[in-house]
Length: 219
Image 1 (tube, rainbow, N blue to C red):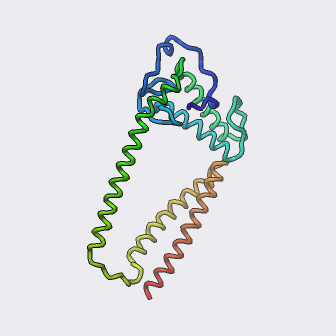
Image 2 (image 1 turned 30 degrees about the horizontal axis):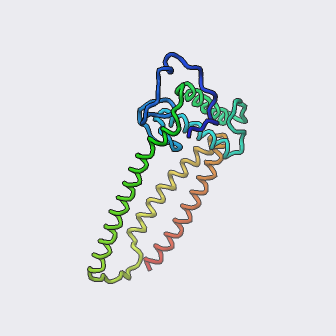
Image 3 (image 1 turned 135 degrees about the horizontal axis):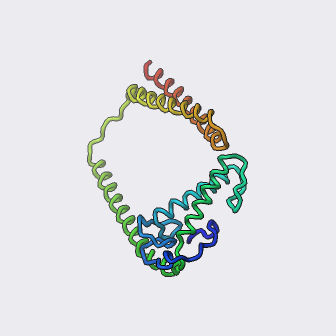
């Protein structure tokens, strides 16, 4: 159900939100019916999911660097951390303003979800059956087809060159991102730089292995 620990107490009812009521199929938080999808096992509209996502991302950032969890204070060690806290606070405030004055009965919500869950299970089972049937048909056809001689050719030089070209393009992109990360400041920039440096090392090792394979195939 809704992450109540993330949110402050709902605001006092107004003439506008007093008129709002939840109906099956609507968002269980604000009662909106626009782009309703499941979030934490309950129907939530696009706006609510977006605000919850902002709060979740802020939590992940603070947890990644062992910083103080979200709370009532905006006290931060740098501007980047403060911005995450401000964004989460604003999202929380907007969620509180949108909240239905009378949340729906959890039993009614579960009852509404069950038919949808059953439909998803049925569709998944149908796709699995179709996939299995196609796989069996393909296996049977392969058994009936005459055996093809195994290729003993050397590695495909054209394929090697194509892969090397793609890796060089990727390396160029990573190098550009490394330069941007080096110019930036903050904890996130340092973490990004470390990740990009590791990517560059992996690409260089792969290029070296491909060059070795190319030379072997050329002999």
